[in-house]
Image 1 (spheres, rainbow, N blue to C red):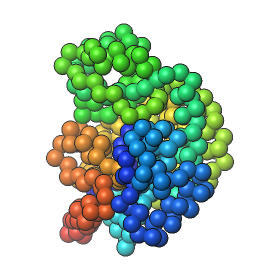
Image 2 (image 1 turned 180 degrees about the vertical axis):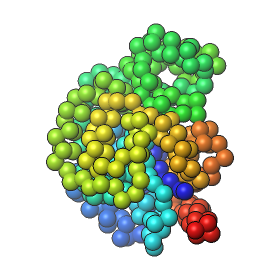
Image 3 (image 1 turned 90 degrees about the vertical axis):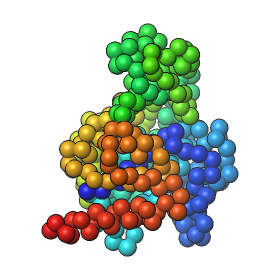
Image 4 (image 1 turned 120 degrees about the horizontal axis):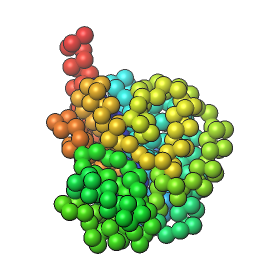
Length: 313
């Protein structure tokens, strides 16, 4: 069983959309998305520097656009039938929702553009940020977070927790990390998935409620608690609540293990989630699709799973 996963914010790098836009029809499609949501995805995805695309209002729609383009290429020619399910990390849930048929891709981009703007505005109210804490004894890490007034925002599994709070507190933790732990500040501009994002939830909720949501046509798991969600409207509601609530990617990976996932394919801009899988789902084959050159390996993994299913049928 192969699952397709979509990364979250912080996975973007300068120019990461460029290799996906070489086909004129794809570039035209992204241009149409840009006009619809009021964000120049083509320019920011090909020309803007790291500081520019760190802006939440730009990063989020850029990441979802890249994921949608990757999914289209990966699942063309009937390969969608080979996918056992989908999940997304944080903003990647919007990509996953579109892949699973919960949201139309254009609606997913429109919603995520508003989400990005709302979260950027919430982040501007007070200087906040996030950092990954790698390793360390859980009790000592928890005590250090409490001492600095920080909270877990992403429970990523594999010995990684992303924490959030004021920029001063993040800097203090990085300067004096817990024993046997490493603290890596992230390229994000706010304390996402915490109480600091409550104004964004209030702003996005009515817009999301008005969006058309249908039940998923592929299994999809939520960041809220790692469970599979079969109701499309509930999945969209959970995505909105998640703006100010922790991401439990460790629980998603636990669900993957429970259902017998045999391979993971990460959509662009890829790398982070297959890295977590190597630690949290040891031995599970994975492919990170960063550019179109990575598609053959991902397609091979999908097709091999299909062949194994046929052999056991």
